[in-house]
Length: 381
Image (cartoon, rainbow, N blue to C red; front, side, top):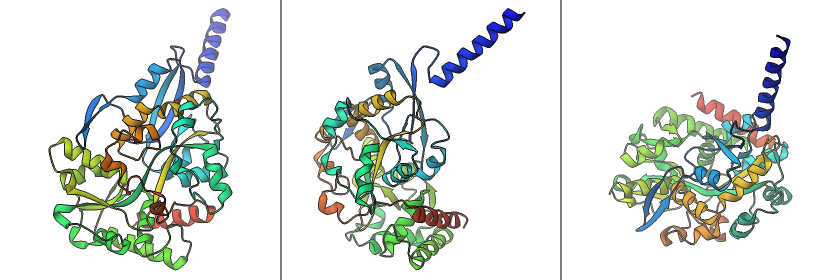
C-alpha cells in the first residue's frame, strides 16, 4: 500500500511539473497566444482581391509544422480593456495589444524586453515607415516601445458607410464625416465598437478635440453626445459581428477600423456584389493604431514566443495574414505583393504627411482612469 501511494504521489508530481513547464503529453512545449478575434489566417482557401488570387492557409498549423517542438494554444479577446486585467494574472507567451496599451504595460512592468538577435525575419522585413512614431508625449517612452514590442498589424479609424444608401461623402472634416452616426433616421442601423478609446475618440474628434484630452468640459460633452446617441439612434454595439451586418445592408454606417472595411469589401467581391458599395473615409485628426506582439513578464515560454513572433514576419505568412485579416501589414516583402489599389490608399498605408494629420491614443494614469470612468457611465445608459 505504501509503495502504491508513493507511485501515485510521484505520478502526480510529474504531471504537475509537466503542466508548470508548459509541456504537452506528446513532449511538445506550449506557446500560449492571446490575440484579437478574427486576426490571423486560419483556413485553407483562395481569396480573390482586385483581380488577384491569393492562397490562404492556417498559419498556426504552418507554425507547428515549421517548429515541431511547439504546440500553440490560441485564445482571443475583442478589446484592449478586456485583455488588460488578465495580463500578469494568467500566463500567456504572446499578446497583441494596441500601442497605447503597450505603453501602459511597459510602465507597469507587465511585459518584458524582446531580444531580437536571431529574429531574422523581423530584423529584415519591418517597415521603416513605422519607426519614430509618437506613441507617448515623452519621446523617450515612444522610443522604448519597440524594445518591448514588434508590430503585427496597423490601421486607421474612420467611417464605413453604404454609398448606395447615403451617397458619397467627399469631405474629411470630422464634423461632416461622423455626423451620420448621430442621424436619428438611422435608428438601429448604426454600428459602434464596444471599445472605449474608439468610441470616446470618435466623439472627441467629431467635436474638434484631441483624442487624448483631459479637459473636463470637452470630455463631458463627448460623454453626453454618446449617451444621447445610445438613447436616440440606438446603435448596434459589437466588434467582429458588425461586419456581416454591413455586408447584408442591415447597418448603413458605423465607426470602423480600416482593416474591417477591407474584409467587408473582400466578402462582397466573393459574393459577386459590388465591393465599392461600402466606402471608408478617414477624417482629419482621427486615430492611427498599431497592434504589437509582446511577451508578458510572466511568460512561460519566451523562446517559443520569439519563434512565433519571427514566424509571423516570414513573407508568405505575413502576406496570408494581411489578405485574410485585411489590416495593414508592417512587412515590406508582403506589402509588395498586395494590390496597387490597397498599397496606394492613404487610409490603409498612410504616408508621413497623412500620419501627421492623425493621432495615436496615449496612456497615462490620468487618461486611463478618467476615460474608464466616462465609459462606464456611457455603457450604463
